[in-house]
Image 1: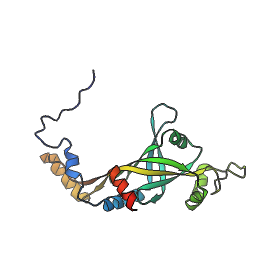
Image 2: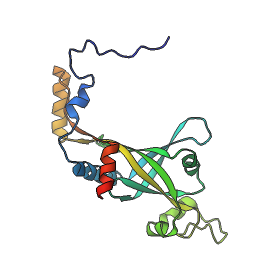
Image 3: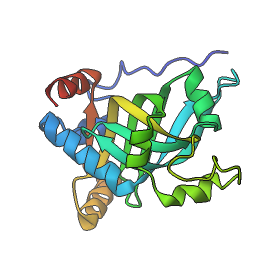
Image 4: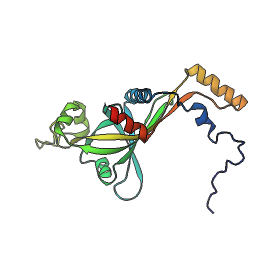
Length: 208
């Protein structure tokens, strides 16, 4: 039997998602939203990139990626091995999701479209000797893990939309809010939930 959708006809006109209603931060400029997101992602450094399996299984696959650089605060660059599974996935479906999380529970989710860039100047600009530890030296004089190794590419993710949550109170304030909510049923207001729409991204691109 198919599960019936939840009905909110008897909610008395109250928000169906009270947590979001209490924490959604709308009184902020787009520039501040972009700046705070960019700062948060840089602080995390590592994120999970989710792609769709190229083997037509329909499965979603996530891999940990290290952020290399950002363009304009909204486009993210990552190193890759051009012959890896993730590049196969992207050749079939370039749509990705990037998720970031820190130890305090703050998080960000970025939906975007990815491309694999093999521009050697860009690769050399962002090259790190640590890449040798991931690619190895095949001892053929070409695939040696150096900046000239043709396996090394850059995945550029162009943001389409983003959602993120950063703390609006210090740890003591968050504890007090949760404690109050537990006793009274009042929804805790502890985070700044922010949304960057596709229109926001288009506006940002046109002016930066």
